[in-house]
Length: 359
Image (cartoon, rainbow, N blue to C red):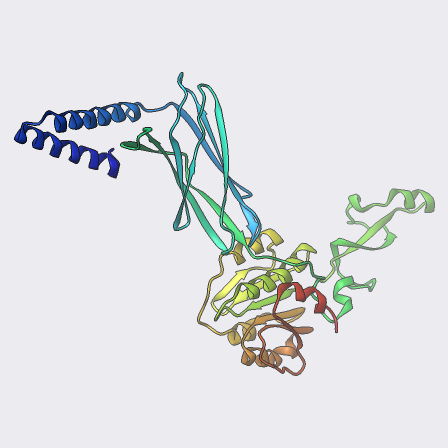
């Protein structure tokens, strides 16, 4: 296709031809002929379809907000002639990134990389990738699409925190009585074998030492659930980062975690740290308050409210009897009080580890 310069050259050549014939001057005709010959040569330059193998990868595919991510473009020339004048155009979100490729020798490969924006949390589509080949004069260009689109997932930033305290140590240790219900998780003691016991639990070394068949008694430790309630009205990245840090601390330690907003659940109790981050990456601003979410949340364990609304922080005090511990991470500067609630005011994510934990 002709570029704007190509269309201008064509129009100028036509005008020069008409003027030369009308006025009887050969010079305009010569200039017009030169312009048309340049256009013909440019079309012949860009018309052949180059034999290319093009691959673009996004690395890493998932990145915390603000960390570096790049697109790496590999272009391999399968033809017998070197290629010049190649330009890659890649759409990144709503913007477009253009990069000029160096000369690609025959049977050779060129690799270029360019940064991807990670300031905004969420799914960032990358592609489609277009390769543009233009002639040296810039009169014509050929655009061809290569490869498939990709997606960069920008997740919340997190800081390392201790497991949210439940306020009741026995939750962490599980039942300690010999009458505790049997389970499959935590070793409690050794006891004599009874008919029906699983032979896989036989402790052969102790059995050989005592002369009596001994089995390991296992119990199920009752781990506290951490319920993270994120207020999405006037949502800020700091609020999402704080909620993600708390949820990842619990999930990463193997504790059940539940993340909810006023709009509904985000992650359920069996979610691991990676899936929690993936889901929080897509959380957007909402209009519903979190009072109802706190009221309907299953009691026990810790309730961690993340909000910038002093009124919501005060409402957290109304559910403190249903939880072992209620914590409010307050993302704001206005003074707030909430009797019975552990307040953690922050204005920067790096402040959170300094004031997190039992107080």
